[in-house]
Image 1 (cartoon, rainbow, N blue to C red):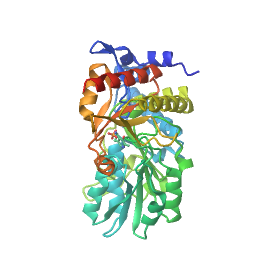
Image 2 (image 1 turned 120 degrees about the vertical axis):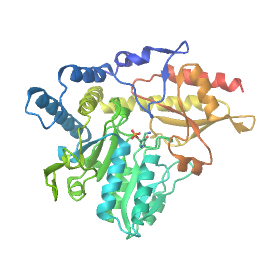
Image 3 (image 1 turned 60 degrees about the vertical axis):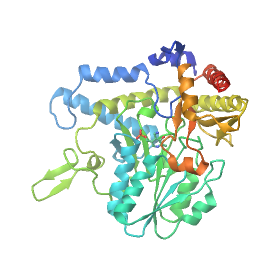
Image 4 (image 1 turned 180 degrees about the vertical axis):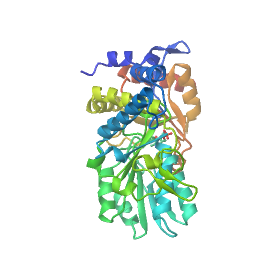
Length: 409
Ligand code: PMP
């Protein structure tokens, strides 16, 4: 049973007030709040287990190692990877993509090669590829989209050439909520023997993800967006690809043997995990994944879809409202909007700041997707993004808040 009351009780922060109003937290796209079990897992590990992993014979080190490696198995099962060798722990989506951009660039990219991304990428799925292209003399190409925020699939196919080495695409837009047809994108790329990276930062928290079913070659996500702690994320990669990539960083853990002349590297996944991992965070991430799995990703998806549809409907009743994207029912729990008054848009920052005074936390700005803002011909939006604990009453508070703020202009 999906009991929103019980669920909200698991998240202590949700019962606090902001400026004398009950907190309405609608900035889940940026980061999610943490259930008690996740915080307790961290406290418990620091109080009762803490020791460095992988290199100790003593009790605590073995216990910490067991927790860390059990977490890898939890992540593997959560995204249905074939093997834990395919699950690399990183600091987050950004580091996962940088890891891939560097290592893939070193192994496979030559002058004149092409990398394909989409118009609606987050900066973290643009800039690492730009940097790699600059280093290697490669070319970054961009899949265009419609005004409604849907990728143009014919244009995508036409952009695939003999020089295309990798396709990188977000699963869900962090601005528009568009759920991209990534399975189709991957299928088409594979017809040309081109591997695909999916940025799953905004999909993993909201829907079941099966990397084998998608057949993606790489998949990145962040722990803190799926109710886990900050500072930990995941890069999934098919073993056949990871085997062919060189290491990212050098240091402890990623080696088998070292002499001053030569180093042999460790097996997967450790080859890509130099230094002490954030083993407390990996354990807490696994705790968060267990938490959402117990609720059921299907149930979370259903709840958030209903909430999103209700919110879109209610927001559309506000005079002057423009919602970007959401022309299809399938859009995810992220809604970007602006409100027009007296012939021009109220500045997103003003709207967001005044909503904050009512206890309503939304995000304003370009949402780390400046090229998408350019495509839409705007500087920024107000963004409400939902999590598993949000309610229709909170949507009502948002809508009432916007009405009140708009009257002030
Ligand atoms: N990609 C997308 C689609 C995102 O929404 C975000 C976070 N806003 C990122 C990547 C970057 O994630 P992180 O900052 O956790 O590395």
